[in-house]
Image (cartoon, rainbow, N blue to C red):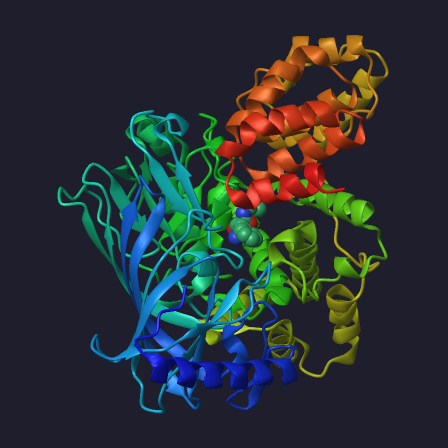
Length: 627
Ligand code: BES
Ligand code: ZN
């Protein structure tokens, strides 16, 4: 919605608008010159000029009854060699824009709407403009926001709101340069109903404010995809000198028990790759609809409640999100094509933290399970599929649809391969230097390669060909020279699966103490086709259907669907209608569709959809609704 104060502004804005459209057309890749470097971000309109922002002041009121955020965002301009500021927006209702002070209303226009990218907000500015304030509100369909009714929370009597900005959804709640290549600091004032607490990816208070007004400050530069807000009935519990957990009061005790090792994780991570620079490290437990396992919002990881299993068996997820405090939050992928720099490094780092805390046997299992997931992704996508290269080409695609195990697991195995080639000591020293060198910057795959050449390869051709970076980064599939490992614990699980498939009961005393990874390995090594008796026996011996471990349930339900094991369907339906984590629900809906159970899938989805975040429902729509 455009608002102009008078005709003069209107004409002026129209001229600027047409001029810009001309520029955008002649520059369809969004190719820009930034300093000397040419940077391409195909997922942001904002990089098409040379104005850079350095700080955001945000003031928003959270309106639960209308399900909107309303207020303003003021951008402090850093560098300006242009006369137009372009910001990304999606479904925002902009009511006014001011330059430098609140009496200086200025015209603006919106670019053509793109179904993935949203709309460019085009604001003519001057060479000496220092601040641009945008007064706006979000729309009810804002893609980053999920508004939950009290009934969708644990406590059932107060509503909940959370954001999910990664990859390109920040623009649906903040007009911003929504590219991971652009970093800024921020402070914010958020007003919420007096009985709710507001938290952000920033310095947070630990107590409820009776006036409902919260102030936040993030003094270190972060990209827009790490902007985050959660509002709900939340309580805090400290877990040591520098960390703690927020959750609804009903689950705070369980959460504190589950995450008891958090401080040790922070210590292990810092001793590996340099100091934790963000101040505190806290986790907030989300409602079950949260579409991811975890999201590494700085200082405040958002985590799914599905990792609360009462036996601490899924805490690797916390190690993962914590590791992002270095890989991702400190050193950030420049564009989403370089996503493996965020996730591959993080999976590698996550397992180093886990090894430090829980030992090599654990880390070996983590590695083998990851390897299995990589092989499956390669099989499903096709070993020669160019999308299985680490460096992606996501132009024209929604980066959210390109999240798969390639970036995570092929990325991890590439780094593990370098570790094994050069030795752990040298590799660790490299990583520590890498994080220190590039801290608070966004880098490309090519930047990483330059640093690798400079610090590790150093002109050694033999080493370069052993590492074979080009094949890992630009070629499909897996290079022949990748590292593998062994695990007695997983061998035992595999053997048990083989024994069971031969018709023997396979009850062994030792399964009582099995780790989640062993159960997953057991389930993944069973034949895809099982008889009704075998399924009944499995459930009878191991009680999968009533498991409270979501990872195990997800694998079990896949067998259930493939073999039409009806006794477990009510539990599967309950799982799908309470848990919104995309990684779990996506394979289940997909399998229902491919095994001729689309009608059932649609019926379940109809009930479940109102409880899913759009990130998940968008994916399930693509599976079930579009052909
Ligand atoms: N940053 C990701 C989640 C993400 C990726 C959101 C891409 C949007 C686009 C997060 O760190 C993550 O990887 N989560 C995993 C955790 C797992 C690998 C331990 C998840 O949610 O499953
Ligand atoms: Zn991650």
